[in-house]
Image (cartoon, rainbow, N blue to C red):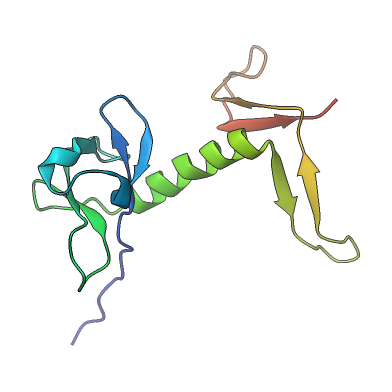
Length: 124
């Protein structure tokens, strides 16, 4: 017997107007009109069961392995933009602390370089 690779259930997806939504906030089935945050394929909301975890599935029946990671990536950027701060963990002799930002910039090129970070927290 081969061990199965666990792939977490996709609970966040994109709407056709590029908003990130939770599975419990959309209509069930294809009426959710959602797409995969990774491959942009149509999704089906499975949110009317009391037996299984509510989740999105690819309408094609073939789920992509990076969908969950892509959804978390987008969710992290969204939380960072909304909260304008980051909780830093304890490290060696430094205590855990919340680092507030005056603003958060997303997906902007840095100077003339080819570097384009997902998010940058700016403090004056």
